[in-house]
Image 1 (tube, rainbow over the protein chains, first blue to last red):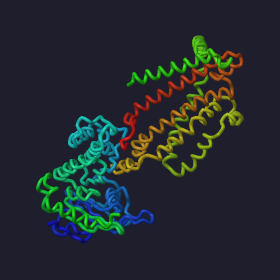
Image 2: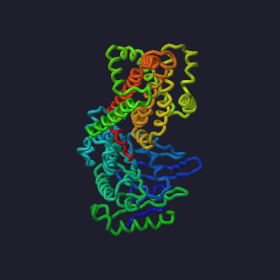
Image 3: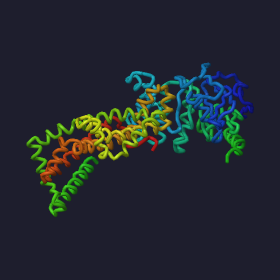
Image 4: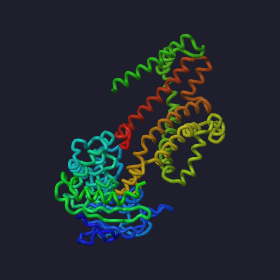
Length: 268
Length: 253
């Protein structure tokens, strides 16, 4: 059975003591009069993938951008590896929903862009970029431009760029929502491999229940008005059964159903 | 594909010049020479050095004016695009400048700056700069937020964001502004020579008209248009070399 904890805050560490990579404490964020987040606390275990799942308007992307240091919380604080976040840092890399590639730059320059901004020498950063381009399966496209690639390939470039800076925490903002269904399934399988091999902490925003349950070690359900963490679900049994068996595992199906039941009334 | 575009260019030139030739033969007007007469006059003036002397004179205010408009215009445009305050401060000036009937204002310029190079450079700048500044500012302001955010998340400094993201992203529109501005600058240079003191190409136009040597007049007009077209083509090449990936639109298409 899935372990669930209905309390916010320390829910994730209740049963098993995970090492915490990222924690957000009492985060509130207002945009003018609009309250996007209210006193939200959440912890993200090291080396695992945590999804932020919720209906639109629940502030999940806002929370991700606050963790990234792109937005400043109105109150509360974020810690990454015990360090307080005051802005973007080398310990976090971001994967964008709309890819955010530089259209005038080739694939290799896009992938190396994070390193370029860090002042890494050209030959060195291109060597690093090349190896990650290979790893995401884009070998041979180093000198192509983004407009020559399909949506899925563009997001592979975005992913390679995030991996190339070798940050401990990967922040992914609905990374697969703009690619087609088949590519998305492939991405989800690849992501599981990545989580296993990279020893990085992944924070993954999605609006797809199936996707969240499929890829996550821990799913945090966010609800809007007022924005809060309603539930943290840790799928326990199907992770080791291989990517092909997850979607027909009874626990997987139960969790998907259960989440839908609790989200249903928030969807207009 | 290159060949097809070249064929089309040659074809459209042939049609245009053919129509010109026919119109000259009808004739549309006593003052309208045929294409071949005009080309003959052009060859003659190029042969005897008239053209060379004229362009030595005309190119000075043109080159200085365009250089100032391009560099100052782009710099100001970036500034205006980045800061609401400078937008408020400068934009109205350039909007007024763009809308002003310049020919009517030239006497004022002459009053203030005399009939020398300064006035002519100013005319070129007033013609060229507003569209360069306004286009650049608009393009800078409209840089997609997501790539600026991407830059910041990968630790770009403010200067990095401007140099490596905003300027390249704005470059297609900046170049469009440059093209418009520079063609306006060519018009300004001739306007200055017609309205301030007849020198260079403007002198050939004025003088040929006064002695009814219409082929020479049209040859001079033709030559300045040709020069402008060649220059704009060069600009396009420069853009293609600098920002290769921009040629076919955006990744977000």
